[in-house]
Amino acid sequence: MKYLNYTLTFVLAIALFTSCGSNKKKEQSSDTFNIEDYIKAAETIDPTINSVDQIFDIMYMVNAEYYDVLTNDPYNAHSYKGSFPIAAANLGIYMVDILYHFYGEEPETMYLAFQAAQELAMHIGVESEFGAWTFEKLEGTTMQRDTITRMFNALLVDSENYGSEKEMVFVHTAFLTGSFVEKVHITGNLLKQKLLLEEMDQEDEGDIREMLVIFMNQLNPSSSILYDAFVKQQDQLEGLLVLTTFEKLKDLSDHLIELKPTLAVAPISEIKENEDLKTAFQLIENLRSVLVTAQ
Image (cartoon, rainbow, N blue to C red; front, side, top):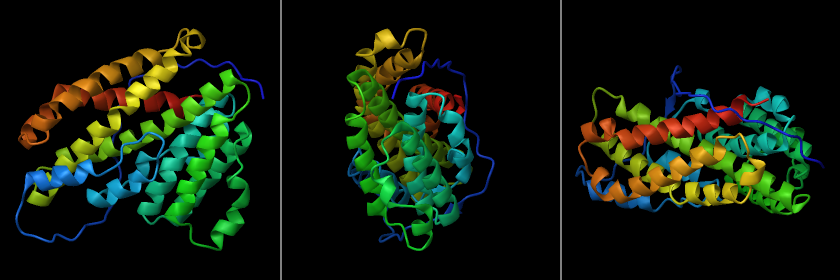
């Protein structure tokens, strides 16, 4: 397959919550509140870029609410076929969305996201694992978390072996970029939503600290890995702001990791007003806006 030329223009976008969500509360085993316990729990989440199922662990750990507005519309899939990198990036986005819908116990929406991912995988030519799962087959069974993880891992392998070396780098990097951006987009927006609460109990405060640590860990080192990948292809990125944005995100994530020991235990009011955190939220939304609105 030959690459189609593409141009991305970044636009400033801030994600807004406009819908109500369903909440999954975890059981509290103790009445005592220890900030360090929440931070230690958050550190157990694997931030590896080439993994997608940690989104499921995150949702349960932080009492996440389900907001379908956070996910990409499955009916947008056909609009991404004009560019293989954009198709690959949104394939990564839909794979994360499938798990988020799975967590939210929304099988119909999950299957629509699966169809969107399958459509893009087939378009790009990395559909080996998807070939065994038709929509009709999924309707007659219960999709398991391991099934989705296996699909993601197969897509990683297929994208690494994709076409020429130049095409492989773009498709593989774009796929990882999409899944990375969607993970931090969902985590970041859930964190922002928690920070907007006018009244908080100890569990809410603990959830905020867990999400904060997870968000910062997701940014670093993933943003550096993706930045390095784009640097190798910078001659192909002329006129794009992808490289510049990832450079800013990489530098910012390095700084946030340095701040983590103090920011994670800071008063909630200080976390709310932290300008570095606000900038990180904005950069992620900028990236995602480019990926999901591209034609």
